[in-house]
Length: 190
Image (cartoon, rainbow, N blue to C red; front, side):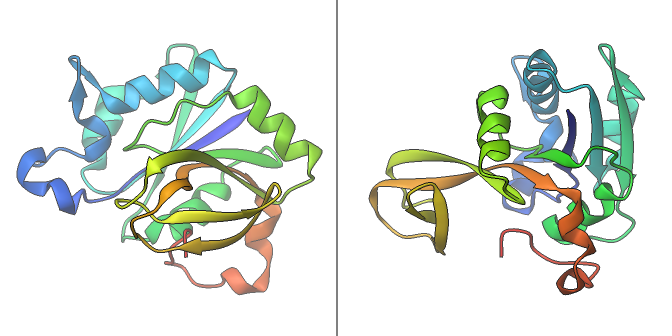
């Protein structure tokens, strides 16, 4: 499976702490967070990676190069900020699989990719979203489900035992060929 990792954000909420470091390159136990994410998805069978980069992209490119372990890395470079949707759409242009795993490069969500792919294929979904149930969701928007289908998203609010979007998706490339995605820059979440 091929994966797109969104690693192009500015990290504005953490700018005072990051000090010119792209958020995916923040060190955790002396390793960039992005390397922890890559290790996890490679261990689970991802065979090709597209890193969607923007802000301080040279720091990411210089660290990872064109190969991580035995897996090739291709870069989709944003010359201007495209938002999450625009970044995914642009990276999809160089993707080759029909369904692509898409992850945020600045957060870690431990998901069983094999089960996630089976779920995606079983429901013949255009988009599948990794979700997690939390006791307290006041820091997150929540996902409203009807059986296994997402029917709504709610903005950040205090809620107990609700599901949140974890920023892990399987997306069919064909959806970006539809007319409603003509904008170059847009939010995928919205």
